[in-house]
Image (cartoon, rainbow, N blue to C red; front, top):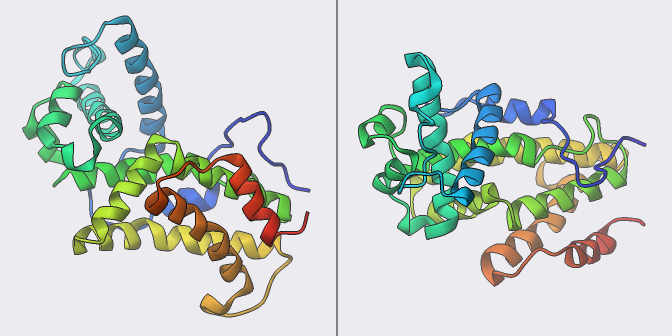
Length: 256
């Protein structure tokens, strides 16, 4: 059986999800995979610095951007600071309270710097979502081939959607997409459509090559049956996606 998640460790981004991140989409200042790793380290350092009081009033680590050396590295540090600040502020103040001014203050950069790379807060959040999902929504095996791999992925999806900062980004963009056509096009064309295509293909492999076409595909029907309650519980009921709930859901649809 293919390897699954063990001891809560995160598997590396799988090739399929790396492909999702590379899907053509409006240029919004995306980070590379290496930059995202650096951003993750910077986020951890920033949180530790905030806990110890070594941050600016806006929340950026003191000297973080200025100490990076050449202009290219300063620009990359500033961009990472913006992306990390947007994640943190969304959790703190929500989508409506999130502003470019607030992000700039928290990141320790000028608004003009942000507008050099992104058109709006939606574009910043979208880049965060795609890049974080490359790891957060990776399958537990590169070539899943067993129902246990599907079970592990649904748990991972529930953790991402219900608890991770990037899941809050996804929730915010899904909500805004109901009112804004551009956000809907960006979210579906640049992320959700490719994510579903990948997940249906992997679900089909876990079921031993279930047959069907389009939305009548047995794998697609099963995947929708598993994911829809997660979205409903998180977005409509606003209740936690706890492990007991996810296990009960999986037991209804998958063999032991």
